[in-house]
Image (cartoon, rainbow, N blue to C red; front, side):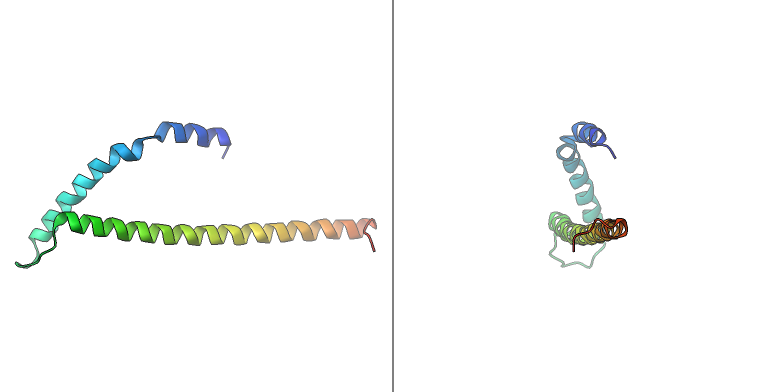
Length: 100
């Protein structure tokens, strides 16, 4: 994708997370409250705490999966570089211009 696409996309979505987060947070809190109402009496977990815990778990798994994606990307880039270097050296050797 072009750099212009990303610039336009970033400009269009700037500030979007800060607008969506309160809406998503409130909806998650309501869902957690409904779920906790179905639990046995005496449980002490509150809906807000449940939402915070879910967010932290999501964030941790997201960071972990991003780390895996970066490692895969770097591995692929290294492989492409090695293949490109190999082709360049083979062409040089085939043309007889290589240094001895």
